[in-house]
Length: 442
Image 1 (cartoon, rainbow, N blue to C red):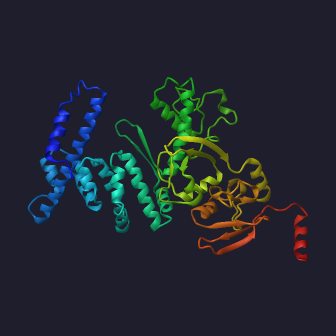
Image 2 (image 1 turned 90 degrees about the horizontal axis):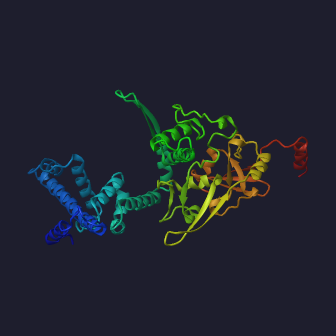
Image 3 (image 1 turned 120 degrees about the horizontal axis):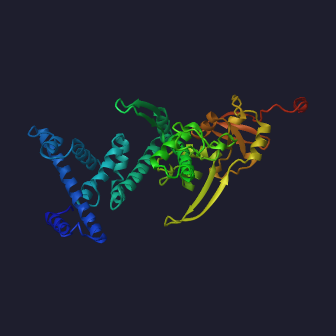
C-alpha cells in the first residue's frame, strides 16, 4: 500500500509547519525524515511517468518515457535515465516498487540495485529475484551504502555457486585491466597521472602512502603544511622510497635530513602490503552464505587469494561480540626467522620439482593451511615461488608431505600428479655417496 493523496498532503503540511531557519536539532531531524518520504514519493512518480510514457511510445502515441521527463521537466538526462533504470529494476525485483511508493526505500536504493544487476545474466538475475523480499528488508530503513554492501555480498554468493572461481576470475580481469595514463593540461601545464588498479594492489599502494603520510604529519618540519601538500609529499616519498623527513622547500621529494643516507632510513620494511578482513569460518572452511573477505575499504577479495596471503603475513585475530564490539585481539606471525633459516638449509629453490626460483624469492607455504588449523611448525612448511603458491591456492591444487619431506602434488580433481623428495639443496660433501650406498643396500 503506497502513500495516499491525503498522506502526501499531510506530509507537506507537517514539513511546512517547521521553520527551518530557526529550527532546533530535533526539528531538523523531523524535517529530514518528512522530506525523505516526499523524495521517495516524487521518485516513484518519475518512475511511473517513465513507465507509462514507455507504454504510450510503444503504441505510437507519445515520445519515450525518457523524452516525456526531459521535455516537460527541468531535470537532466541523467535524472531521466535514472527513472528508466529504476523502473526496470522494479520490474525485475518485485517489492521495491511498493517500498518506494511507501517511502520505505529511496530512489538511490533503486539506483544501487539497477547498477549492480545490469550485468547479471538471466540465471543470476532469476536467483537474485527469488531473494527480492530479503533485499527489500535489507534496504528498508538502512543507508544506501549498507544496502550496496549486502547486495554485492548476495551477488558474489550467487556467482560463486555457479562458478566457484568467479571471484578469482574477476580479480584476474581487474589486474589485466589495471593501467597508468598520463596527460598534460594544455592551459596550466599541470600533469595528471591516473592509476587504475585492482582492489588488492590499490589497497597495497594506499597503505604505503598512508604510512608515509602518518610520518609526515608527525614531523615538526612539515606540521604546518596544508594537508593537500602532505598528501603529495607522501605520494612522492612512496614512489621514490624516501623517508618522511622531506624539506618543505623540496620540490622533488628528496630528503635533506642527515639520517637520509643511514641504513634503514627508507620506508617499506615495516609497512603492511595489504589489510584483509575475513571471518573465521571463511578462513577455515571457505566461502559461505555470510562470507566476509574484503580489504579495509570494503572491496571484496577472492577467498583463495586471502588464504594464500595468510601463508606469510601478520595475522591479527579480532574476536567480535554479537553487538559488534571487540572482545580481544590476538596477533600471531607465521614462519619466523629461525624456521626460514632451517628451510633455507634444506631448499635452495622452490619445492616444486621443475622450478628453479631461488629460495629468497619464495613464500613459506603451510601444507595444512594455517587458515584451516595447520601449525606454523617446520614439518608443515615448504617454500613455494609465487607461481606455484598461486597454483596451490587459487588453482585448486593440494599438497601432502611425510615426516621425511616427501611431497605429493594432487591435481584439483584429487588425482596424484607427482610424489618426490622435496628437499633440493645440495647435501654436504660425502653425504651424497653415503645416500647412494644406503639406497643400493635397500
